[in-house]
Length: 263
Image 1 (tube, rainbow, N blue to C red):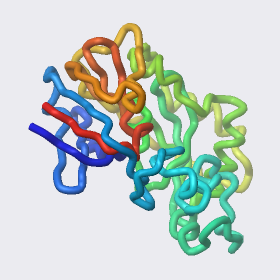
Image 2: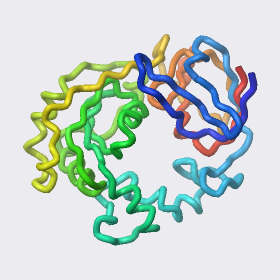
Image 3: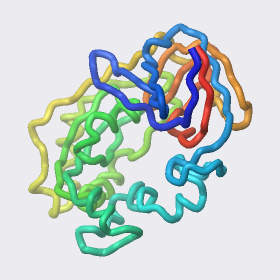
């Protein structure tokens, strides 16, 4: 089988095991069905996810110009506390920013390599947890806009991590922690503005990933540099493909790369 197209974040479904898909312009691929099979990846060109041009990808699948112009790459994406749509203040495009920022957001705890705090739109639960490779997660706040989620996250970052150690996550060096107990420890540090939105009775969500073998010594695959690679797929976790030779390929980080995939 031969597939060709631009890489984007893999859509997922939360089932007994997470189901992964690659979606191209004229085709799609159920990645779980490729486990234990040899696949080949070839880098062909760039294709910016915004303008569609063959321009070197800068960040998040966008070329340099688009990254610094479009609202989908504003600073508030990575730093929710910088959101200003609730104040009617525009960053790059107020209409877009209102659409995204002024909707329910979840502040959560997730455990992938360690317990971390994070923010996502309510519509992105549990997708966000899957993308981070979390094996368990718990919603602790549901707020009406992104700004409130951001200030809650900032307050909790002094007491719990806000980033995932991707190496630990991919090696599956995990420790089960009671996220409900951790939530109860952290509630005292939340700002007064978000106290009405605390979720006190939520239960943890458990997530199982389709992995036959976890890598021992991680080696990141740089398809832009190597141009092509062939290996046996042994698992998928987060947005990573895990191969038999301990190579790992972050599909999301390579968004905007136009590739050929052979099975």
